[in-house]
Length: 156
Image (cartoon, rainbow, N blue to C red; front, side):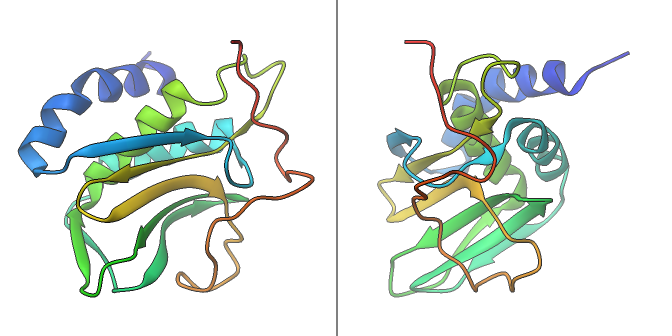
């Protein structure tokens, strides 16, 4: 039986090649800078988003939620003056890097995860808390004094 963890490991291992194909240049990774998503939901979201066909578009000057489950979401924030389009599966590539490198304490010790990966092309992807009942463009990821899904904690 193949687990979501095994699938996530394959996605993470393939990510650098996929970035090169997509023409995106990861620039900066920030961990724990926004309210947390739930680690279990993020694993599911990475799998669901990776197998999604087609493109995902984010309007200019907008943060758009492209995936949401319970209280966990993937956002693309586009600070550019024109809309941005990416193959949906590449959102999973970025989310998997955040999942692998941020909030690295084991799930039994820390259930929250959050992070942002920005690109040289002027947009960022966030793994963060999301209210799935709000509209896709209603919220922008931000910090929270008492993270809903637990703190982002790393082993280092």
